[in-house]
Image (tube, rainbow, N blue to C red; front, side, top):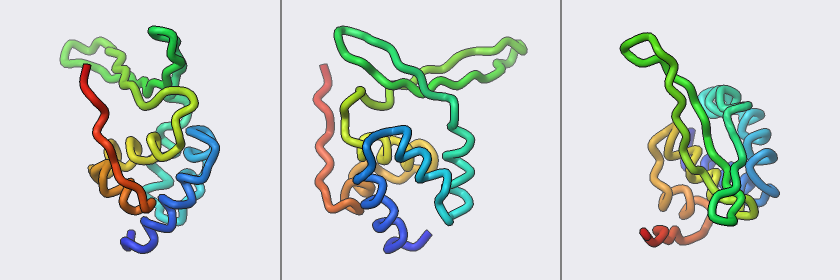
Length: 116
């Protein structure tokens, strides 16, 4: 994908109302790799309330060396966060594009979350 196309896509995704709408837009992307990655993620998100926050998690299952299925859970964003948080996570996990580069494509500055 050309840089200009990436920037156009990220800006459009940043304007969506949240993860479901952004994921749907990614599934319809003209870039086949992006669309396939988004399609593969369908149904892999879960909500959980932790410490009073509604959080969105990406949940996958893989078979370990012993043939047993293991569940992996990764915090993606909180409910109410802007869609760009999901978009940056998507491009980092699927294409190793750094969060700051995705934010820059949207014309924004990425701020590293504070560690607790």
